[in-house]
Length: 299
Image (cartoon, rainbow, N blue to C red; front, side, top):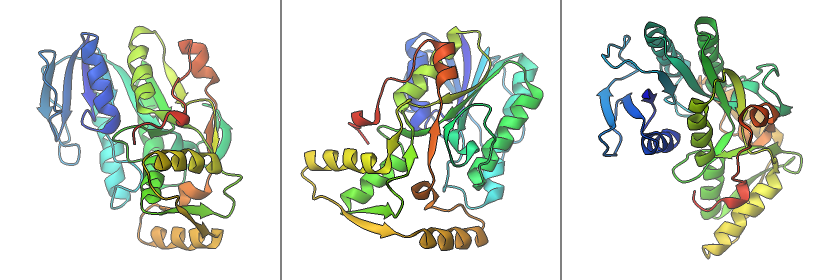
């Protein structure tokens, strides 16, 4: 199968590329950087979504998998989020329509905002600049394409990720943990990068369209998360981190200051619960993600 893949040098895209090639798919990647992989089934075209506005390729993909994007906290402002996360989607959607390609999009659980047991039909209340850009990208897809799949991906963990767990682990290595006052009530669901790739690649075998939450079904409290990371640090002979207590007022002030600067809050993930319901995923794919956060072997 001919597949066009974006974001192939990112932590998630790397796994997807390897899995696609291992199954014998012909993959064209596009982006600013060339993936470090050698295969007769792989080719690459340079393309910069920040600068290029039209995609002209002789390659006619049966499926487009759009993994590229700027994650939370990486963009300088709202304009940069839109330019990469929204405009890239618009460019690829037009290319998909031209070639009648199926469109698979890696979205984010952040589109929901805060909440527990969030389902695919839950309101999209995400308020961060990042979340708004993902919501807008989803709307572009749903408005123009019928043959699409959107995966709303929970916070990922695994080697090479730069997510919530990765940051907490490195705080712990530095000797401290940020500890919000309501840490006992905080709940989150996560997904291992191998599971993300597994479901994206498996979707190629199925005649499925629509929106799916992608997360391990077992939520973890903030206390459980810290205990898991502490255990890993102990195995690495690191000292037990000291808890630095964070009152809600600190978060509110930080959020206001970042908002004035046109940037997302860096502390919000420490104060907002987010758990996904994956019943629809299980019913459609016949399985659930298998890697629990307890298997946090590589960060």
